[in-house]
Image 1 (cartoon, rainbow, N blue to C red):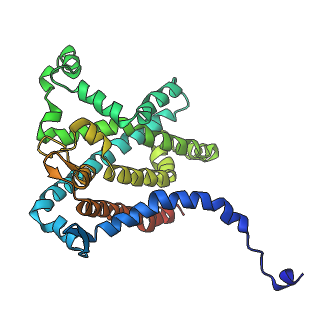
Image 2: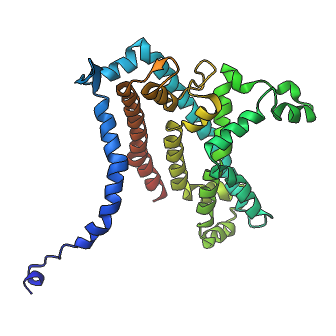
Image 3: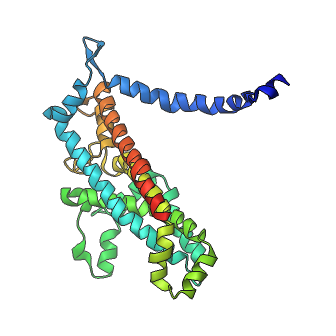
Length: 309
């Protein structure tokens, strides 16, 4: 009676019980490694002991030629890698979803499965598979181009600095184009039929119906796809490592922040590993991704919400 009279609700202890296992695992797997990475980036190994140096590691990474040349090269490559995926993968995925949402299209289930299937494959399978296909020695690409009379277009794309990064980026597009397609397809199917019928009554049909009615309604889904593309591309490592190795050749032309982190932290060939500088690269990657996600959540998403209202 006293508790009811005071108007206070009893504390629900069972909520903590249910949250504790997940919170514990998340803390051990995500929060603690992140905090340890941030801590390592502020120290440096001097005489076999860790010495606090503040932001000196970041200054070396940005301005010391021993580190900065490869860092800025990897950063610009990463930006280009993201732009290719953003401007090729997502528009094609949206177009495929729009085509698959046509009720009269036959074989939609087969097309959806065939396009989405590469997304389920591992990076190792995709990387080695495309490396074999594009090989000028034993690959099938020269034969196929020769079969259609276009063999003159073939070049060792993975072996030329000017083409290697674009080639790997397009392989990434091929693998993940099913993700935006399936998300946009689900968003298009969720649009009420009554709205489409009302648009048809007003004379809005065909392509105009997509641009004026459907596209504004799926903008939140497009925003989610964009931020997923951003996070995934700035975390990219597996595909580059599989196709081009840790050195991201030729001549670091396919080097991304992920491969730079790997070489810096663990070392590779004649390069000795430096956990503190590796943690510094990882911290910069975290800050870039955090900035992109924050920009989307607090600026872009709010504008999309206002536009829909």
